Length: 136
Image (cartoon, rainbow, N blue to C red; front, side, top):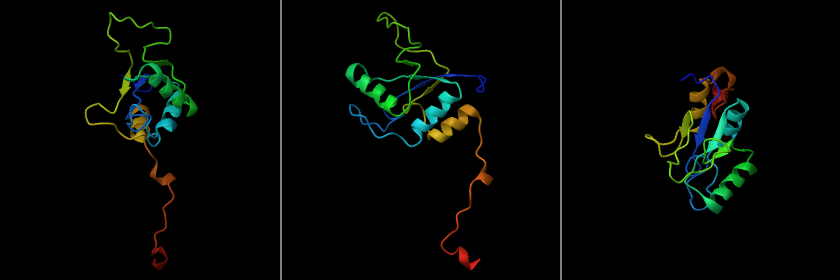
């Protein structure tokens, strides 16, 4: 797969976008919404892919919208898809971001770097002066 193409990315909610607090909504994980916004700005389509349904799903969608993320689709492969109980609920995506994958969830900065192949530039960071830097 060429990661420079625009991707369809399925993202779990509990434990991935927010800390796991189901049935309540946990605190946002650090850089989750910033990374999701950047992925959308880059042209990727995001699908909310979660175990939640009914009122709890509506709460999660509204929480994401309040934090600036509107998903391409929610628990479906495309917005117009009608759920058919005779078929699997598995959705189509190029990538799945989920806290339950082997090895657990990575940090959102690492996820973005893996998708975009972007490397941090250490020279862009100012070196902090330490407590005893005046002795140098």
